[in-house]
Image (cartoon, rainbow, N blue to C red):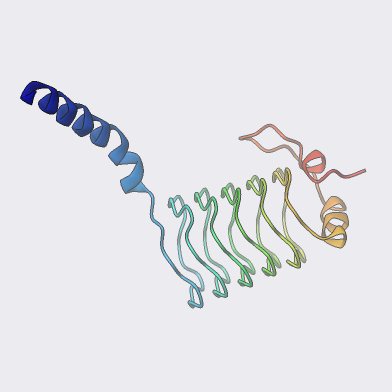
Length: 161
């Protein structure tokens, strides 16, 4: 009987060792209502983190993994969002004016009432994103390129005519 317990303990320890590196590299943090102007989050894994009502003007999220993160009512003006993965995130009422969303993943994100004035969306993937009709029309007017990770054309992801 003790051999079986030892075997189970060894299997559990191995399972923890195998899965632990994945868990320890992800950070779930709350930056809601924070002043984060110009902060560097490039390359960070911040899956499920909260950035609601935060001021991130000029922040750098290049190649960051922010899947499932909440950016509701945040300011992302002039932010570097190149190649960032926002998939499954909540980005409603966000201000993306003059931001660089080139090659970003916005798959299955909620973008309702967000603003995209003078934004760069070359190669961005908006597949199954939920947005207002006016937003879609505006983004379609400037959409071009293909996402390097998914191979999806930006215009196709926006379901442009």
